[in-house]
Length: 165
Image (cartoon, rainbow, N blue to C red; front, side, top):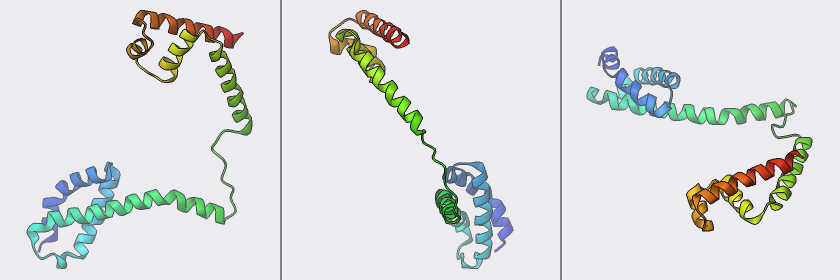
């Protein structure tokens, strides 16, 4: 079997398959090269040259899956190596001061929201906090869309005034 002729004939089609499997051009190129290398190494095991394309694609898919698994595990390996070497991994979460500030802000917002008139508060909660469409809010509360918009506007203005003062 002439490997070069088979590879030249089928490599573009297999590359397009690897693009779909791997998800990006760089990985697909690397996978195709590795698959071609493995196919060349084990060419004597291929019984039917007409099956070369499917065989090469299967090799490529396996290489791609291994690459994806390796990429998924790599951050964990780096973390464990850092821990073994005594490095502390900095927290990516908010600082305690930021958490406290956020909690205070939440309490302030909740108390200000509770101080709104019932109709305005309910419209504000459904529209801005629950992200419900205006038509559904108006229907659920038994008011017109215009009344819903008016109440929402008043709620926003009152909240802004109370939070700023």
